[in-house]
Amino acid sequence: MKTHSIALPRHVGKIEFYLKIAQTLQFRDSVGAMVPGIVHAIAREEIESCNVRNLIGSFVLQRGRKQLRNCAGRCIFFVMGYGAEEVEIYLIPEVRSYFQGITALWPHWLFSSCCYFPSAVVIALCCIKDLRAYREEDRVLVTYNKEAMEAFFQSCLETTAVLDAVARVPRQESVRRLGHFRQSVGLSY
Image (cartoon, rainbow, N blue to C red; front, side, top):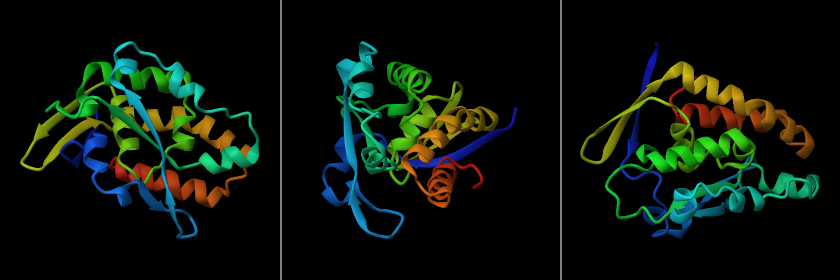
């Protein structure tokens, strides 16, 4: 089994740390313009009850090409209600279970996810079965099975490629976005 390690800031998935500075919820799009992220806050109660209907229901992918294109790569998924927890979001069993369920039912999240924001990394880590985390002062060293992470990307890739085609997202933009996401979890572009 090949393992890989990445260093992440402490509390990387907790929205409470990002909301202090509004500009952190913006990023540069493919043409370099600053755009706001579309924030999807997921309540702790939804996580604990495994209620995925609210998140999945907020995406009406049949609206049309333009609406689909508008959400491509702009969504930031946050879990609310865990701000006081010392443990990292991607290590909490019910959060891991929730995002594994979301990914199994609705792999479209990768298409819509802002890969330039760490919430996407949190979801990917939640979907990997075996993680080890070692805390240091201001960061966490996370070790995971590299083949499992590759399999995770492969499983989401088919749906993402279909939605890219429907939304007419240029192939180079899609490859660049996914490549950035792969690099953010420590995989090669």
